[in-house]
Amino acid sequence: PHLPVPVCTGYDDVKCVANFLGELQTYHHASGASEAFIVDRVVPLALQVSVRCWLGSQYFFASLADFQTRLQEEFLRASYATQILREFEARSQHLQESRVQYVRVMQELFERADPNTPESARVSWVRRQCHPRYHVYFINGTFKTLEELGRGARLVEEAIHAKRKYVPPSWWRQWGFRNGTAINVGPVLREILVFCLKTSFKVVDLNRFGFSTRLTVN
Image 1: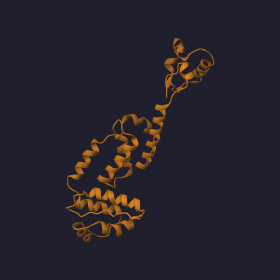
Image 2: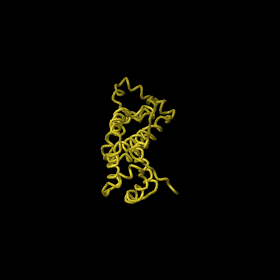
Image 3: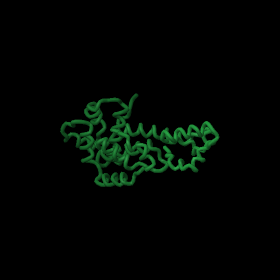
Image 4: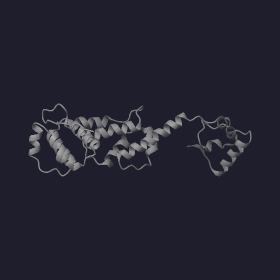
């Protein structure tokens, strides 16, 4: 399908250079073209008016990232870096915002601020700024990119949703287990719990023997 080429006119463009670079990145991914094709064939079409004059004064671009960096150095407003920094500092995950949604929002912020930010730095920032309720799910996880973190976040969201929707069987509640939550016990207590399930002796009755205080919930 034919894809419209994003356009940037330079100093007087009402559209921010960062937004243009975001559109160019989207065009790159959607077209499936190589970086070399984007730099050599698409960029000269995209840059018009004053920015085209600037292009004529530039040396060979080593990569798409090199082009992005030099374009930002020339045309990005001086206040833009401060604006993005404030957005970063203030942008933590909202209570009702899913982890997947938060990862996508931060991906966009990174692309606007500095497309060359290392993936390790992106992952560290997002993990640090996420809502505390998610920390336990990711504390031992290893994620090399935000994409990996996004996939992990989706699995976590599915697990949380399943946990909220789970309704324990009636016999589970009958014997005194709390909300159907699994219980970690040692081998001795495990035998006691099996005994409880086979008889009319309820788990809550273990209080008189002092065992219930040793039960730990997952």
